Length: 91
Image 1 (spheres, helix red, strand yellow):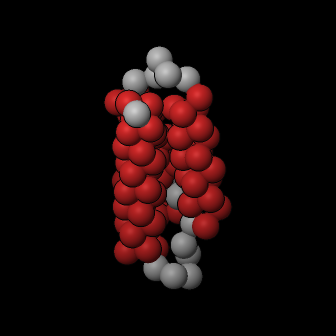
Image 2 (cartoon, rainbow, N blue to C red):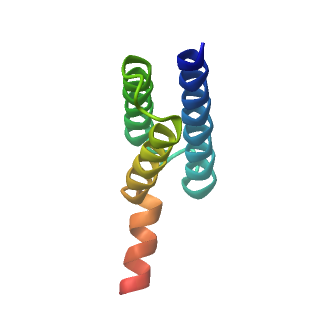
Image 3 (tube, rainbow, N blue to C red):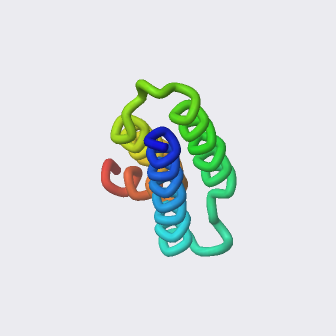
């Protein structure tokens, strides 16, 4: 039962972080420049982390959530709105 609850918590965190990413990118870039590839990478990465959490019992829930949070930030750094903001900041 503990394994199932931990996996459900990680799945809920993955869904919430992916939805937050999608909303933020839609608000920043609009419908024309929405990063579908990055969203797909987040979905696949989330499924991989959920399956790893389900397979390995010694993996803590907060480790899995933290790893996906860092992955989300990494993917968000390579979207067009963030790259354009960094270009404007530097030059």
